[in-house]
Amino acid sequence: MRCCSPHDNRCPHCGANPAHDLAWQDDYRRWRPMVERAVAWLVARGNRRLRYRGTATNDRWLHHCTAALNLRRLVNLGLTHTSGTCILAAIHP
Image (cartoon, rainbow, N blue to C red; front, top):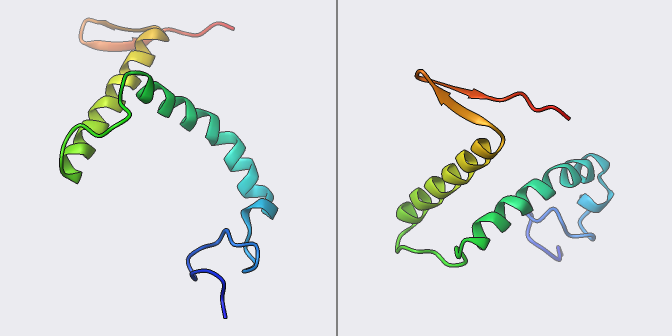
């Protein structure tokens, strides 16, 4: 008898455990800080709860909100708009 569902790959009793998979750990360490930062930016602006009823409306709102955050980040990195083209300034260390 299995202790968990067949789709749960995190159960230590069922063999496949991400804690022992080095490739999974590397990906997790690589992407988690960026994901956590993006979520923190959303939450910092008072977005702890969904604003609308319905999945489609909330999905559209989330996509617009994240697009605005990405645009703000690009502007802070030096994005400029001149003569119909957008240029990202070179970053000097």
